[in-house]
Amino acid sequence: MRFGWILSAALLVAACGRGDVSTTVGSEAAPGADMPVAGVDRESASAPAAPTTDYAALSGYDGNWFLSPGWPGEYPPGFAVLDADVRVPARARPNPTDPQDVTCLLPQYANYQLWNNPRNKADDLDYFVATKKLPVTVLEDAEVEFVGDAGIEKLPLKAGDQLTYLRYIGEGFTVMSFNGREFDINEGELREITDIGAIENEEDLWVRVTCLGGKQAWLLFDEVVLEKGVYPSPITGYGEAHDILPDEVETVRAMMSPEAFGLDPTAQSIDPPPVE
Image (cartoon, rainbow, N blue to C red):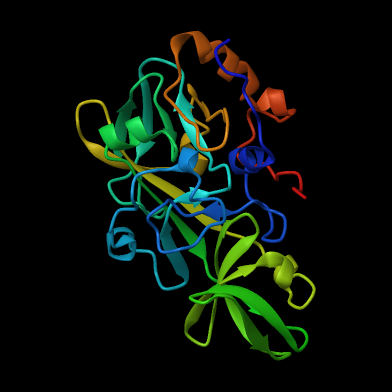
């Protein structure tokens, strides 16, 4: 076997479903997005610059959602096509309320993962996440640190103040808004002084793919990963991803199947275990 497959907790959560904000490994913006992410400058994790897409205009999500480039996780999820002639339902517009009005034939062995730069470039892939904005109430007077222009700064908060959860960045950092300004705050700063642990994270992971034949369509991760012949992407190391090699198919199939995680392969919605 050419690679030792490493299964991370982040990948397991992303493949199986969503957890609450305080326990789910969250979303790291693709390099090029206007969000500082701890560790994102590591050379091995480089990825194409984030596209300048107006996701709101494109998708039709309303103002209750925060739209931003990239997919969740310090080890972002993805999906790989292991079988031949895999045709998946897709959409012309990335909105879950739209009908799946496109049938997309995907290339065998393709691995749709943020770090798979050759595939991302060749197929002109575009990843973004739509995250439901949620209120987070401050429970006591406190100062929290955030990443500002001058480095680590402090944000004074009063009991009763309300922050708005926008998205998780990665490695503990969350994007929150307060008084019309966005802040990158470590969740650990908020867990004891807010009700962030009680809210449910809701997000849609979209990727625009180029189907065989040349047409483009949008796929929703939670849907496509349930299609026959499609499996969650294996993680080989930080910042590393490649299309699946023919001699790796059976290894990936065995290690990334629902049964390998002790899950029901027929279940359409599975609550993930908590991730510490």
